[in-house]
Length: 261
Image (cartoon, rainbow, N blue to C red; front, side, top):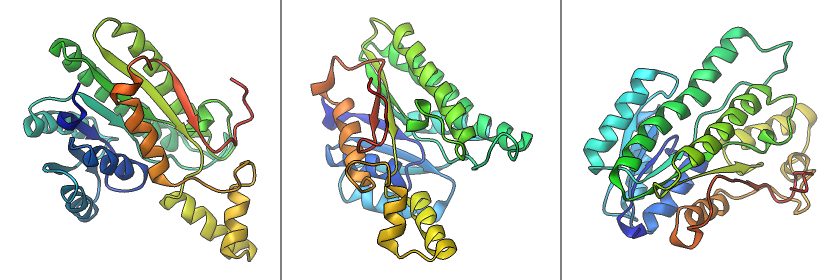
């Protein structure tokens, strides 16, 4: 498939990793639709995307609401006339442990992270399979799908579920030309990680390099990742050079994970 003609939906695309991916694919000439919950952030993001591509559009949507997910998909098809690349990048779940997290925390995270991915995947898979043109579905999860971390319990649980959904889809779409993969990032220079660094500076009196080093302490490269580094990986995954890549989870964390597989 000619990447310059791709029709792409990136959820959570108004900032952070989602925006970096949208920018990278726009640079290849893709037509990109992004979604987010803040109209002003979407407007700024779309303006920058349009400096790289002839088409970009933003849709306000809350992925924790089923009606919004349905609207997002239908509106994307109206704008693009089809879809051959879906990047599922959901929002953040609350930090906490099994003792501190409430039922409401679990319920909201289930809808926002797992069920939004299921609903979008179901719709995209049906469309891509029927088109006979193939396509790509890529999920952004977390290294926590391999190694649980106490403070990200809800995120780990929901995103591990997404990884299972991805593996199932890769099997069920066999022979359709649709490839399904997962990217599991570690710490990247995005808003939430910056806030964690700033919290360390305030609460423990650390300067920025020391606080950043604390966050990256388990990383052999000694730093956190740049969003465009992850975007390059996603661009490769959905590109023609990765035609045999399917049904896998790729960790990108600078070596922080201790897994050997």
